[in-house]
Picture 1 (cartoon, rainbow, N blue to C red):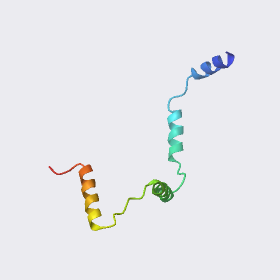
Picture 2 (cartoon, rainbow, N blue to C red):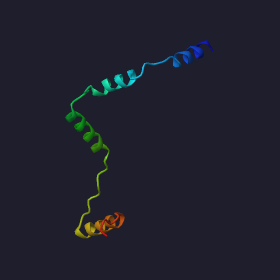
Picture 3 (cartoon, rainbow, N blue to C red):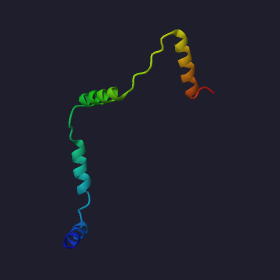
Picture 4 (cartoon, helix red, strand yellow):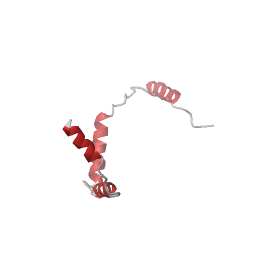
Length: 78
């Protein structure tokens, strides 16, 4: 009970305006790693989780697959 009252009292203390946003802005401005590394890591992460597409063996299989994909894709032509 005493701990709860202490937490409520601390939560009700006035906080100077702008301090939290200044701290957050300062934290967000700090570069943790170069953008090239981030791009590489995201690319590797996505590449591992992307399923491999089936490769049709013959031209006829390619045609069937193309028709199937086109039927699933909404047309952008008017």
